[in-house]
Image 1 (cartoon, rainbow, N blue to C red):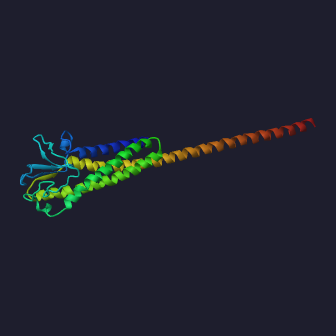
Image 2: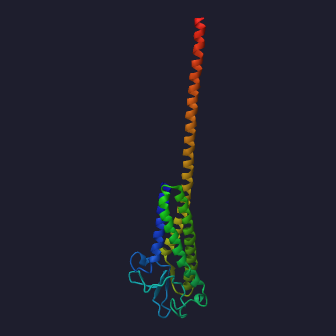
Image 3: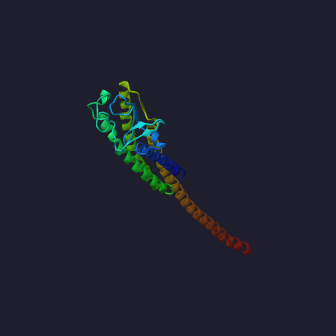
Length: 253
């Protein structure tokens, strides 16, 4: 139960981190208004704010307090500065973004993958309740957690590939850019939490199985041990009772 409880805490933490990252851009309140994937100076781009931040839902400007100021939300919002989804112009946009769909697809697929990973993470969390009293629950939770780990790792890998290259593109064009430390930290921390929870759930299931096998073996040994002891006592009494009449006959003769 202790191992299963630890796994539940890890999965709950991973799901919370993913939720916070997903809410960034859709909710302009602390702490989610500090979460973003990429920040870049976009004052050279016509119609763009002086500083832009990319989230799962939109491109946001930055308030005087340093928080996100976001507009309408668009699911699976891509990193694609030249397209109409972002700024709709090539003026002031780094040339590495022009004429390619690479960044569009990398960031577009992040959204469904993170939702799938979150779904299986929540499933593992609910199944983990049964892991507190059942080894089957531990194995099922470990399996669900492994699926969540797979999709969350894909999401984090796509995020890293797209936004690290995007940051480098802006910097090489003389536009200061940086990665969002909270978004990157949360997404990779969720990967670590899912991995640890998967391993611990599996270990909990194996340990529980060994404990139950040892207990049942001990019961069988105890039963046969008592039976043999009873039989030994009976044979001892029979032997004594057979000896006594013989001794008595010799004395009277």
